Amino acid sequence: MAYQSLAKLFYTDASGERFERNEQLARERFNAESTFKTGIDSDHGELFLAVPRELSVINEKILRVERVVSARLRQLPPVAHAAMLRSLVIDEVVSTNELEGVHSTRKQINDLLAGSVRTATSPHGKSAGRRFSELTRMYLGLSDPNDRRPETAKEIRAIYDQLMAGEQLGENKLDGVLFRAHQVEVIGQGGKTLHEGVMPEEKIIELLDKMIALVDSSDVPEMYSAIIAHYVFEFIHPFYDGNGRTGRYLLALYLSKPLSMLTTLSLSKTIAENKSAYYTAFKDTEHPLNHGELTMFVMKMLEFIRVAQERLLDELDVKLGQFGAMGDRLINLSATAKLGKAGREIIYMLGQFDLFALFPQASLEEIAQHVSLGTQQTRKHLSRLEEMGLVEVSRKRPLLFELSDVARNELGLG
Image 1 (cartoon, rainbow, N blue to C red):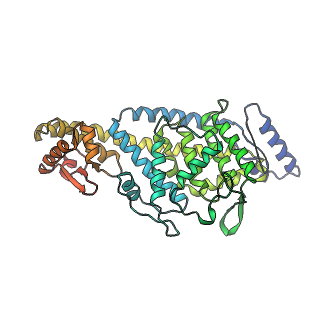
Image 2 (image 1 turned 60 degrees about the horizontal axis):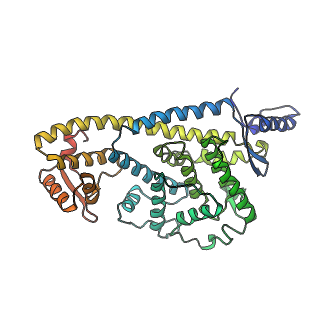
């Protein structure tokens, strides 16, 4: 029989001893040698992760597919890899905003990355441009190998301050030493209270320290500890507002160690598309009859990761095929149009942007860096390519370039 939650087994048990059986099975799962205990108490028992066969299988599948993803990524040149990373960051920011009920578009986030900040609004009509900018910058920073994980509760507060930069918090402004000083509730549909955050602030700090220790522990597999920490953070709910976006950023930060950055950055989109199942996983875990077991929650999050992986792998396979064909066509175009080295490299770069970026434009500075020339010399080469009808200016402020339809057709990108 497939592994099921303690609560589900309870409701399928028609015997008069189902309460006793529920408690007995909870003890058996909790005390099993393979179980990971967190040392963190919930309202219904210490949080723990049992390791049934299904959990081991899906974890192994993820690691196996991740090797394939990594092999595909090694086939990408740096420009294509960076363009795809940027695209996924844009999707990540838009998706995490969507989960918070904040509207943003891919174009707005791309403009921020291009240095052309556009104003966006929250549901309250407040400018969200600065917050989008900081959020985007932080997700881009996940690719930095020197970017370290928070080691103290104070550093988690610093992450929150960065993520919330530009937000007018009003009555949600923090009033404790580091976190909130008063109770907060998670309200569901119909005004029903789904969860009350941990109190008092000293307890918040204590549990965050335990969460950090769990993530840093070498005794718990990294994917398990990252997902457990995600649940624990939302259970603690240390802020009045911004818990969701902070928690998902920390999840991405923690998962970026065992998984590739592109897989990690594909996750929020999958969660946003399965929002109901995501929130239900939290709700079900808190059910009294589950006694603090995290197994079903971890398995659901691993399923989201598998979906994100498969989507990423499908996209990579398609684009790698197109990329190989583009390279062959570029050789022919370079010979017939007599592009020269710089011209060929510019077309090659813009072709990668066209294939792997959400928005195919590149700035003059980016192109100059790629061809290892000054901006003035690069502009001359671009002007020649414009005259040949292969490149066009897509925006003047800031100055951005992209392939023309003629060039796209020549390269098989049309």
